[in-house]
Image 1 (cartoon, rainbow, N blue to C red):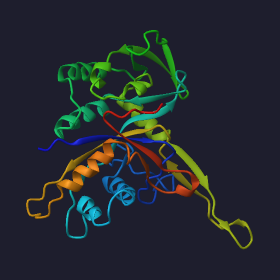
Image 2: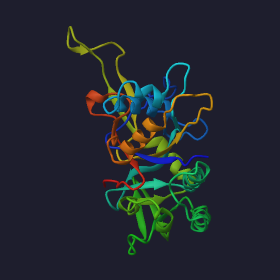
Image 3: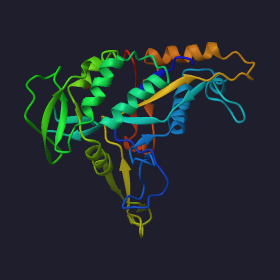
Length: 292
């Protein structure tokens, strides 16, 4: 299998990647995994936005070679972008980036499965996953490599948790640029994580105005859900090898990977309401720094 590129997607502004029409209290919900209710960014959504960004950097004839066209695949293959860290208001560092044992285990398993460019210390990984599995609902785990004098208790939103030190700097040591977020990482239980990502997204009430009389239209009030700023997703980009394809796309693929690595494709507009300042996101590949 070809070595794949692991990418992180960090939201700069609140992001609405819409799902189908809402069945609950939110009229316009975000995309979520049906089995876990965890927010995600569909591969097709990310691919479409990346395609638009590439139009400014590539010749028009190169775009279908990379992304495909009707009836023909391109050179790039994408996974969904899955949630890794979710921001919540915190009594430490203004906000914390929460994760949970299920998310971390899945993240590392996929890193190995896709043969990514992230070198994993499997022994340290096993120790981390085993330790995380025992986190209780009234407890959170905080890395002690960054702050050895962690408080005995921490507030996440309005909830108080006991803290316990955990060492996982060694696990992320292969990810250059990850040190800037390590001091915000907090591991909560799987149950608490699902509650946070379900009930602590941003919900915005919007209204549609009748331009003729400058008043709201009948039944025009609606709610829209946003993924908050500072959320971090991860996804995989791989080279797709089509044995029936006679075109040589490697040159344009290598050009794409070079532009991705040197930051020329760093900022994307993802989802709706761009004119309202929503949807800005930052692509971070291994070796690039997180800002914050």
